[in-house]
Image 1 (cartoon, rainbow, N blue to C red):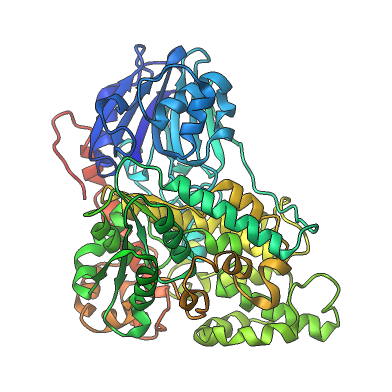
Image 2: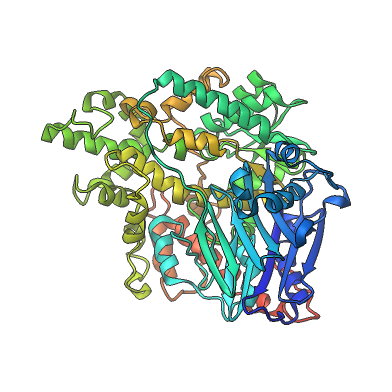
Length: 638
């Protein structure tokens, strides 16, 4: 786990002051790799890499990066290849290190660009292939590890974090289409970012730079080719076997490994299995707020810890922490994000980093097995429609009106969402209905001048993903989970990566092992989601390792933050001071007035607060990023 960066002149000419440019990028991502750093430049000066190392395997100097391999190949690598010992045995020969980086170089020597198909893990890497005169930028299948790039003139820059590209842009400006995406979803679609000129390399893609052209191409896709031949018990057994295998692989490390324990099914399953295979007692970490029981799930985390022998650390998080740290959180995130849960994650990661260097989490379960309550809301509407039209049993719906009724109690805290969802009508096309369910833009249009952002309509980008050809036409459930898998999950993984790497902590996500994900995509919706029971097949597959109290929960709400209580109480003056000046797109007084009408778990105010802090940290400090290119600067931005 590290930070990577680099630059290449597409015309093959020397990049001016390349060494200094690499140093600047390295400085801006130094937090990602506190153990070591290095740079490499090609003798011709037209391409170079920077690396910041967090040493997990072979922490000796032999594992230093950028690393050169046989045949004139050089790489700067971020992440982990969990099956590197098996690949190393398959490749054979003598080895200089005990690192997956050296295995990666040898794999490319043997299999070329197709080496990525053999990698089981999370990764983002750049590889210069001298014989082919080619640069490869590669990102893992799910976007666990980040990679951004920007072309400025003839030079293509890339880095693990977007902030490392900002000193080279002609100006730091907001991308209007990216902002429209953010206002609708609180993340961007199709590789856009909120920084004009900065692109995200999509998960499952590589960028091939050859002959002066940078061409993105997809190397992996998930296909929903449904398996109608096997029974539910077969899927449960396969999930259980693959999950055990994945957790064992994710425990490979030369440094201590811990686990997040949120009290939910996903993290509990991962932590419980890890405790079975760990060579010593696992350390677990969770956080809580003291504003009320709805903000404290540490009791469930303690159940997991007690039953599975975890050494649990519980940290209390308060409003003073929020006022002190929230600006730093947004800086490390690079972008405003969906929901304030990134703040407590940041605090728990900071606590975990004091005791361990690697931590396991449960990210991904909701997207691949169907755990979001909005899926139930959407299907409830479709059940009503089917009952009215008499199409209940025509194969288009995996739940019936009768069977879904027992599940509706879980919607108790979602009545405001239901009211908003239905206020503009019922039924309609599936893509239009799901877009309306997740679209947050109507909440902010009274506060933000969206018309100033141009004619781009986020619905079209949404619909292209939602109605993807790799998803069956009939399954509403698969379409919903597929969209979230392709968009929301990478956005959440961005948070997972940034809040951990801000503290030099490697976060691993065993549920996102591609054999497990590929299996899940073949499971019919009426097995995953029978009667509207969320994550049904995953819950059954993990019942042997998860405490009964966790398996039976129906009130899990993520990591809710008492933001509204703080904003109307002890943080009121602090937040009003945060909105000190008007912005071009919104009036600060209108934003603060809107706070009085914010629902308890509403996200309108958070979305604009996050946006305002992002503008302060990056747009308002543009001169600091620009000054970093001066040869004598000592600027440190935090």
